[in-house]
Length: 356
Image (cartoon, rainbow, N blue to C red; front, side, top):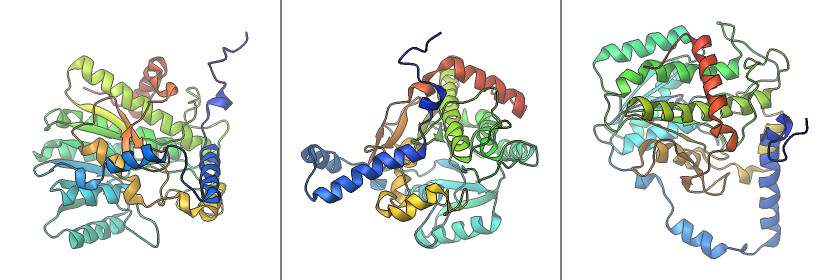
């Protein structure tokens, strides 16, 4: 049977970083070569005049937020998106916990935030998202602490290395970190979030996605580091949309939304495939495309704090790879409710958890 022209093949549906950066690089080079204003410059100027920035974050005093990752304090010309989001939210009075695997980096991140913001309410917790038992125990401590939780930003994420790696639990590392861990954490914290003030969950996706192989979520048959990342980010979007649907249907009162940072100078590539990979080569060859992490984190901040952000929304840079955050279209693959339902069921089985 022939494929409908509007139903892409699996290969066509994989929106890889290679293609994204190739398109962006072509535009950047063309603009530099032209040396003049591009068509529509007046509209761009108007958009910049209305740009949303960290200064627009409403007062966060009294709000309690948890950000996974967040220990990527500035080193050389790079920084982490979660660190920059935590810094900006603390500046607005939020009480922020950053949670990640590396206790030493976490302690240094907290030290730097406190140095930049005297009186900052910020702390670090150790959390390895690839250990589902640890995630469940961590959430249980939150639930028993008596503390409120108003927002969860599922920021932590990795890109695969050249060869397939598995966690101690036997799961493929990228899928476990980017999808399974956040799914469990959100599920286990949902009772606490439901009691929060204007509660929301933010899922950090990417401008690149790839069609999920629901029969091979763990990449046991044909591992590819870039495709593993792309597919995991579609998984993130599918879960974000499904949580919103279930929240509305069951009356949880928790808004679920997603964001993506565009292209930023973070530790994703150095800590993943390495700077000698195709992704690393592009970062070296086209440094002007990779903006500061503080700019990329604006999408996190808009989704996590703006009063205009809504459940089911997807927020990213206006120009795809850079720019002020705005609501962007949820990709068609991420709007597939049947795929979301199948992925949800698979995750419940793999993770041994259920939302309530």
